[in-house]
Image (cartoon, rainbow, N blue to C red; front, side, top):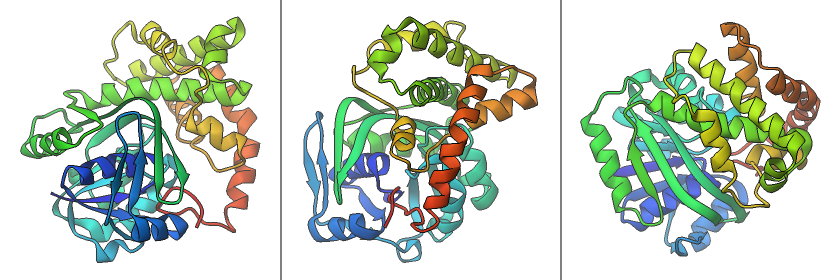
Length: 322
């Protein structure tokens, strides 16, 4: 299977690196120092699931020189997906699968509007990792996982082929999802709520869950997202909110979300794709979402400043600045 990783930062770099480690034919789309390091030294993975270096590693900044491919793993930030959809078109052949792994629920629609919905799968991942330096991805904890599925819920030959490719890769688990919308919303509930509360109150997972005031905010944010999902026809289990709270209780004490870290560092974040998405859907569906609205309206000025600053440093396929 020929695989392109569009966005070779923490998510794309880790999962693409593990697929390459298994013998898959992988090309990493990246730019700047990250691209130069991968070309010169390979892609280095430091992980609690085992270290690895993919060397030599095929890497390029030009999708036209890499495609078409059988599978595109989309690892850019959620706010970069529309731009990525346009840029990845040379990678798309008649049978290409496109698997988005963003912290959001809008990527399948955004990709489908550009490259055609028949190519696009639903997907999500769980991974605590970051780019430790050019060409170096550090996984710091948790079980790396990829969930995937056809948007209409059907079983298909390409789902079986994708499952076989992930099954051969070390250092990760994967599963086909019979209801990928519900699976994506389960992840989205968690990430949108913890990102909103964490960034709004500048708290870690440990602080957020142990302080009565922030725990109440977290439960309120989860409940709002749950009610929006139900109003949108998503079949979430009735115990989704307490189950997600129980999951937060297992996370590393000092852990934070990528949106929280980006906002704290003055970088563009996934605020629009997370709290913003809950607010927009809530308005459309008639569901009140005061906690997400508070986070969105409070953090939006910082987000606008960060976006304005990046006009001098356009986002790259590696998920950072060149």
